[in-house]
Picture 1: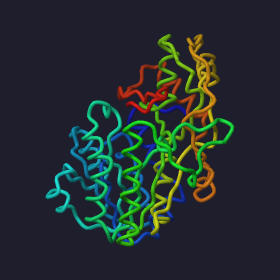
Picture 2 (picture 1 turned 60 degrees about the horizontal axis):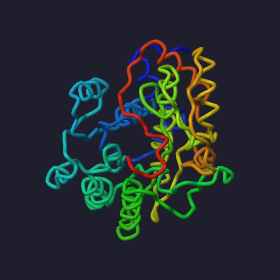
Picture 3 (picture 1 turned 135 degrees about the horizontal axis):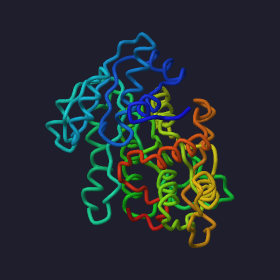
Length: 340
């Protein structure tokens, strides 16, 4: 299959798996997505809506964001998704949001966090407490990041959900703060929580594989010091997150959402070069550790990702070589000091 254009891409990214359809059909109540205007939010909301329709559940799917793009809001409305414009740090605005039984919490700040540390902590930690107070009786799937594990030896096979957290830099520390807040209120209020440690979601306009493919195509250098990484198709990450709502618990349930492979930066760059007829420009030497997660728990609970690493790479190569849109937010996958 070749993905032709944004409309087809978003259809593929929002296609629910059978597991998602069955999960949404079993869940009681509607779904609200907080911070739905980011990279993953729109397709996750659409997947929830499509799953609800396929299950005959007729749930309200509500997307909440500041919606800097009115076009994105209009597209969600056209898909049958209700939208609410809200600055979530505005307590009055947050309190006016509808009471909904299922919450997907996607709000957060990563890029530009260096130099804006106070706002980073407010968005990534303080806001979590506000949301827990508002939705204490709801089921919450809250996004986190594999960055909170810190650098992990390649030989370990990736960090497990039970591993000690060793965040590096204020972004990762503030994300650990977010988790601790959710865990605290889960214990205090009995709020059912699932913490989603994502590492890393990829589509054709964004992601570590896209960054690497574009550098190979443009003849730009790729530093291989951070020599390994995980990647998972954004549609599969959306699906696992929605299915994790059913696993939300008190104490909080923790889940790594990551692809099955520990991928090599050097080897992937070389494969992109072969596919594109280019010679990648590589620099540096691979370190013995990297930001890598073990996603086996999620695969055992919710099934293997539907899109393989090779298929992601083929789609990305076709997209990049044909001038496909890029959202212009590099992942900084090579960053090893936690400064984003």
